[in-house]
Image (cartoon, rainbow, N blue to C red; front, top):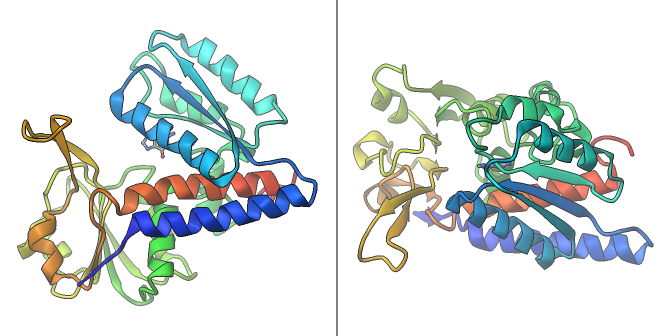
Length: 294
Ligand code: GUN
């Protein structure tokens, strides 16, 4: 069994990005600049955004954090987005989700200029991804592709089962792995809440990607011997013995599933750190005009 060390891989990729930034700046260009909009005080969102801003510093990017109270109106938030769209100093920006209930997330996502949508959430980027055109890939699927690529995990012709059909993980990764590309050319089955006999599918998987948000849902009896298991779940599970009062658990019961796997991602330290790296890679592309000409 091999552990896919997302933390280490993210560190390596960040070092590569930092070198590219150095080259850019030495060539007389400006540093890449990422802005993040954080609304309200959801602890998980705060922690994710903190990590994104810290990572920008680590690789030499400029970053701007726009913090707003949870009671901001939708129109005020749209105004902030318009300003960021028009600001030439900002290469790309994200609006951290989830947003408070009175704000329509779809409307917000649509307001972001696709050229600055380094989260890859805008339908223009999603559509371009589906057609194999240059685009910003959403962070988690991009991170998973990097892991498969850098660990030399062969995907072609393999049975790949994806659990969860969200717009930001399950749906895009199922499209990406079935594309005629590397990594890709897998036979993909996308399972969801209406799937009958889920275990019958998971047991066939050479590569199992789990993005359900259900702590320790996947047990050893649901996994094929020698499978590659990618656990996207980051669940806070109450635990009074833990310093913070909770522990992070994946969607996979790691201790019993890991011994059956050829490769597995741990939680924490697996997919999580890779998502931030993906965002940095997209921001670098935005700065260089690699996806959309400047
Ligand atoms: N909430 C959970 N994941 C993400 C992400 O990748 N981007 C944004 N903007 N919000 C999120």
